[in-house]
Image 1 (spheres, rainbow, N blue to C red):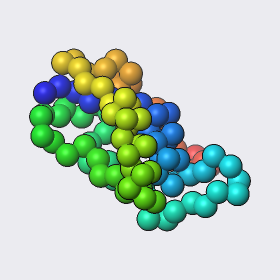
Image 2: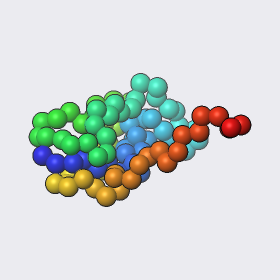
Image 3: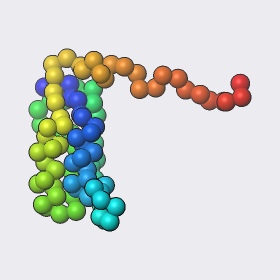
Image 4: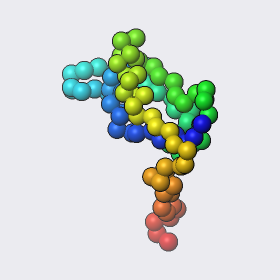
Length: 97
């Protein structure tokens, strides 16, 4: 039990392994590959909670992505200071006011 932190860079690298992105311009991108996040950084999680679903271009791509994704997830008893900052600083509703 604790608070979740997801490292975006590692998650992106894992996505490339799954087929979401590519390392070279001639590689294919697979529209059915990706991740569904059920929890985000800063969420409180408990043992057994579903954090994300992972879909890859192949079983091999999922096996390649697993250790990267595992290393991208960290847990802490206190909420990470990086998460406490607001994501939106200001909302602009009308540029001409």
